[in-house]
Structures are given as C-alpha cells and as structure tokens.
Image (tube, rainbow, N blue to C red; front, side, top):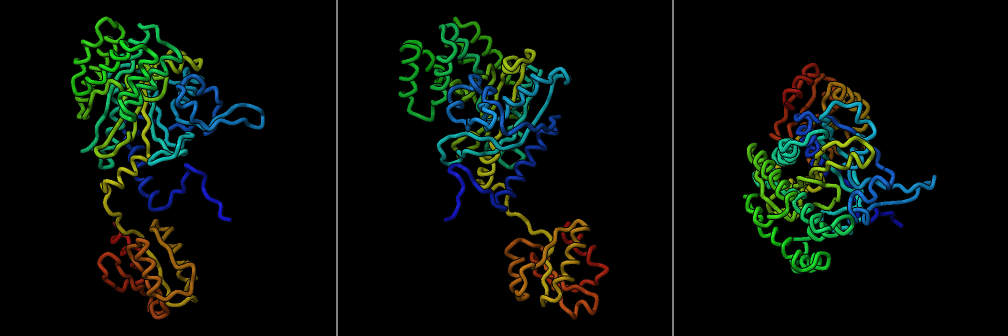
Length: 428
C-alpha cells in the first residue's frame, strides 16, 4: 500500500523549487539591501506564546500537541510572535532600531484549498524600535520591491489601513477583549462572504446603529484618507489614527508605491495596533503578503515597551503568481553532460565530470549505463543541459573532445587542453 503525503502538505519538485529559490533569493536581496539581517527561530514553540495574543482565528487553526514532558507546544503558525519573544528576552543587547528578516516554513490547520496549505513558506522582516510613518512605509516597501524584482511590479497594489481607527471606536463604545476580537474577525470577512452576512454579524455584537456606522467606513475605500473624517467625528483616538494613516500613505506614495485605502482591512491577528497592509497583484484573488504595526506585543512577552512593525510574504503564493503570469520567462540551458560511446569509458567520463565540477562547472554523466549515444543526448536535451561532450575511444586517442551546443546544435572538436576555456566562454 503506497504511503501518501498528509492532506494539506506537498512535495516540492525540482522545476517548482527552481522558481521558489529564485523568488526567495530576490526577497532576501531586497531585505539585505535595506539593512535587515537574518535570524532563525525554532519550528516548535510553547503554546502560550500564541495563546490569547493572536485572535481566535489562529488559535483554532494551529497544530497544538503535548510533548513527552507534558508541555503544550505548537508548530509555529507565523514568525512575528517568535521574533517578539526573542527581542523581549534579549532586547537589551541590541542597538535600536533592530532590523531582522527570516525565511522558513509555518503551519496552520486550515481547510486545504487553492493556495491554502497546512504547511507553507514565508519570508518576512521585522523593524523593532521605530514608530515613524517612514518606518511603516519602509516595511511596506519591502513587499513592493520584492514584487517588483520578481516581475510583478506593474500589477502590484498595496491595500492600507490603520486598525487603530476601528479599535478606538470600539473602545469608546466599551467593546474590548474577546468581543472586540470577534468584531475584527467579522470585519476581516468582508469581501470573503456576503456584505449582509458581515452586517448581521456586527449587529449581533454591537447593535444595529453602531454596526451601520462601522459599515459606513467600508464605503470610503479609495485614494483619499481624509474622506474618512466625517465618519470619525467624536472619536478622538480614531482621528489620531487617521492622521497617522495619512502620513504613512503619503510616505508610501512618495517612493512610488501604488496604495489604496481599505478601511475594513484589519488582518486576522489580534496584536496589530496601528498600520496594517496587504499586497496584491491584478487577477490574483488572494494577498501575496501583508503585515502591520504591533507596538504592545514585546511588552506582553515581558520585554520593554518597544514599537515594532513587520511583514510576511507568502513565498508559495508569489511563486504561483510568477508562474501564472509567466514573468520569469524560460529558463536557459546550462552545464555540461558527458555521453560515452561505450560503458567501458564511463570511469574516464566520471573523472572528467569531477574535474569540471572542481573547476566550478555544472556537469553530469549517464550513471545508468547501457544507453546509446543518441539516447544519452536526448536525455541531456530534455533535462536542460547546454553542452554534450561525446567521449569515444578515437577521441581519447587523439586527445580531443567532440562538443555539441544544444542551443545552436553546432558541433566542434576541442583539444583537451582548451576544454575548460571553451566551456567557460560558452557558459558565460
């Protein structure tokens, strides 16, 4: 009986992984150009790290279990909590602001569907110790610049909000704690379920009049944050949050980002306190990344009160968008494949291949044996090799190699002493 992967988990094959590593490399380059340094945290964390800090949505969709010592532990559902824990424990050792980035897999027990897996990959960054509008705009720029560098910039859009606007309204109405989290959960559903369903859910929690006032914010979506002012009269904290939103919006626009105000964007994590955003690409129905400000989280983990903002990019989603849009183009051929006339030359071919590898050239040979030259050449062609070296007894005796270029289909003889220079020139 075959053993299959668990539901919601995937094997990633070479063609996909080439695109994955290409996207990952560009994200890393964007982070490092902005001064961020990589950190790595454990895959398994104490469950208490997430309990009551990330909202009921994520708590219901985590891999939680008891280890052999009887402790409740969880597979990490995201990275921000881990980095906040790390800074809370060691923050005194770092000069502010701290700029960290990460790349790794995370786990959520969601219902699998298109681009929603139970194991997926994130690349992200955290900026700790800065609270200026430009610090939020910089975090947004990491998402924007990554999408630009993988060829998606022309169609990219950042949806932006400040969750402090809504939280201040709710606090003025005496709505806090779990009830506030439930309101935010309903707001986060707008666009995913019918508007009437969201209105009914909010009315049940807030009453009809307050629910209607909250829903009125959703109608202001666009490019002018000041249009929210009439709906926020009488809510001092909300007006202050709107002012911050306008400053972040202006900073992002100043560096060329395409930004759209989205007042019902709250994201699913309860620890956000201010700016929140998500990155989209035209015709892709899901966010490719997002993040926001979490000024209270580090203190909740026992550290000093420290402002912080961050983002995470869904690498799997960006890879799928790159492949769907075809923006990477065809991968070029590379490397050298050595084909032998007969199996008794395989040892000589192996020595040649190892010498090419030692010289920094990607190289391979037919390790199966028993295949004709034409079959070996066909294999090299189908697997993307640039050159084929045909190795036979006559060529060995004469001290030459027959080299075929699988791009131009030209075939030449190359003296043994000139082989490395010939291949390097052709592969550059």
